[in-house]
Amino acid sequence: MTVPGPGYAITARVEAPASATAAGDLAVAVGRVGGVMTAFDVVESRTDSIIVDISCNALSEEHTHQITGALDALDGVRVRNVSDRTFLVHLGGKIEVTAKVGLRTREDLSRAYTPGVARVCQAIAARPEDARSLTIKRNTVAVVTDGSAVLGLGNLGAAAAMPVMEGKAALFKRFAGVDAWPVCLDTQDTEEIIRTVEVLAPAYGGINLEDIAAPACFEIEERLRDALDIPVFHDDQHGTAVVVLAALRNALRVVGKEMNDCRIVVCGVGAAGSAIIRLLLPLAPADLVAVDVEGIIHPDRPGLHPSLEWVAEQTNRERATGDLHDAMPGADVFIGVSAPNLLREVDIAGMADEAVVFALANPDPEIDPSIAQRHAHVVATGRSDYPNQINNVLAFPGIFRGLLDAHARGITDEMLLAAAAAIADVVAEPNPLFIVPSVFDNTVAPAVAGAVRKTVERAREGGGGPVAIGDALALGEETARAVETSDE
Image: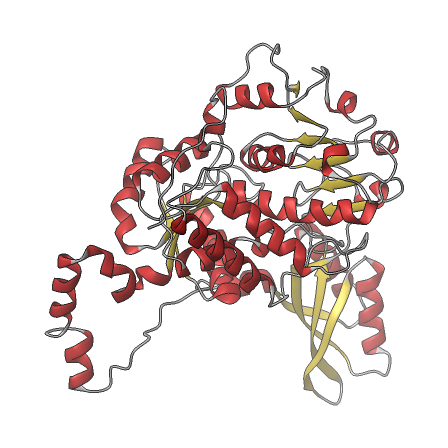
């Protein structure tokens, strides 16, 4: 059952009678309509009245109106104004640029800018690779979007995507010390996006693609990886896949099952679903059945999009047909990256014993977690108000920290698998309510960064290594192909 949370937090400034029961009356009014009071601060006190700020968590914007209405309806109480605490966080943006060097004297200015800076420019012109050590390139990532798939909200456009990209940049800095900057492109033309990123790339040590809709995101990522000499990472695909794989590894430890004995159902074969499948297949599950809005994916299904042809060939060994409900009986694991409320309680009840359910649609999962917990042994969601939150922030900061530290020129599935193992290993003793570490666990990003960096260094020492499953998965290649990568 959904509970009030900080995403819809408000602070109401209220004038109330200065009576002995005023505080209790206000608290009861909030609770009566299902709000959760988080703070009660007296701003001003008079002989006959008090001014208080009441902070509350709510379920929705409509619910905030119900809370303020309940306060306003009390005798002698007047709601003066209401502040939306989420909007206050975003007021003026969430990130800024600050100088790393002092500019207090003429000498400082002469070295940091003209004339001294000219010498550094000439050095980079002579040795372009020195840009990684002599500019912000060594620690800077572009967070690139076209706004075509913002969170679960759909095609909102570049401007409306900015708050998410700012938040992403803030997370990069907070968890891994990486300087990131939003690059919101006012185009959804694939060729324009690719060319724009190509011409912007010299300033950055890595590209993080974000909230770009499938199937365009697949082509954009693959072509940019081929064109650029810096890592290109689509977080909606690979960040999600890495954390899912880490969580699944620990969930199977909890239920005492091996991957090669498990039948897995993946619901949703867009950006995240395709990447999850790509990382799972090398681990040889007993079977993996992929389901999209049209039903179970199999080679004989008419009208398959090219992005699904490879999936059809590599999954569903029993050639099952039908819809999601037909795929569920006997499944050991369900992984949903699709849409709300697709599953029924009977679907979970019909899974194998000690089942694992990852219902990751956000904000509303494929099934109410409290219902899933009646039958599944381990349940995870994408929400912060339930145990086992599958959150990309466990992956992308550390992955880029490792890539930047190693001066990597690309990214492979081997690096992603190493990142997933590092996240899983942070949890020494998993249990049904704790299969992934907290996003605030300060050991996660360094562990992931170290695993990625070591993988890059091993590949460099060996002269490059194969990508585990070819990057062309999403373009419908008939077979995965090994490609040589260089991290020099």
